[in-house]
Image (cartoon, one colour):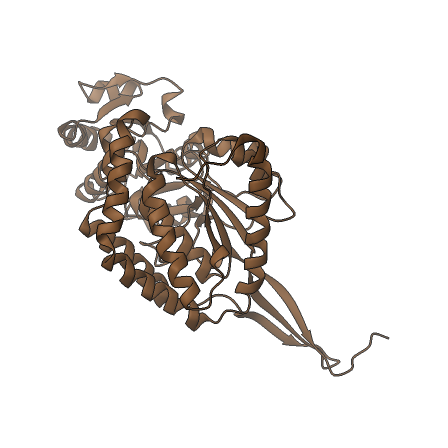
Length: 424
């Protein structure tokens, strides 16, 4: 891997951003067909160059012990034939999606004959900082280019060789199809100071998107001089209503919590209506314990679940990212809503109920990016929502909220068509 000297770091970051800005202007003239051809050929070539990708990945895996990675983190880092094929499929799925750029969102003709159109346009340059998963490198590049944005990729050092091998293939194909090769750039230094330099370049970079731990995201939010698309935590809830189907509630809760523990849309907190708590909690507790999940509950929960541990107030606001769940018995849907809005992270929250009015009240009043009704919190995902690849999930309210796909990486401008119109 190339190394940038300390004294040259600032200049390197500035040059990278300038080249990305120039590439973003060139991308505005690239057709949707050319972008799709790039995606499809890149997918084909990733499969064909499996040996190159796995050789690069082997270098990352060999270095993994030195970074102190857990077994789960090493597994996420590993590239296999199936995972390379999955990356390629992801590119093909993005190619199959409609191109959002140039879409006329609204139009009208004024009484004086002036035609006003609201047209979707790219954001420009995306600075994307993310964890050490090689597939994210390809996903981010695909979604940015398809939506007309240049992207500066700052991946984790743990996947440096794998990410470089992927980006080299993407750039190789880009040159063949007339796309600017600087539209996808991988930062070639692991120096943490580089992030700060990029975050200061608001005149060249239009948006920063951090994807990783809370510490990284807070650092980016604090230092960025440009807008940031982000979420800090994923304290997601499942509320089992008085009118819930108990079997459905068990299936939704177990899937929400146990499908994958270390992800932002996993359930961390369970709320159960008092009317069904006696029937539901002992049954659910057995299923959770069978999956190795520790229950931390309020007083009523501890009375109903022998193995439960008394929960602290901090537990109800925690993102455990592991085999722990907080549980509280509530007296009404309104109490559940108030608890979620107080302790939650505005990410994903679910209700299980056969009462339509309770479902509607929950959906209207819970202040979260995604509300699930009789469905697992794990569905809050760009692929599951039909967006193709996503670049992250936002809990912000301005610009983008929820899974960020192609349209979330665009803005709009107004175009007015006249015929020599002048304002009187």
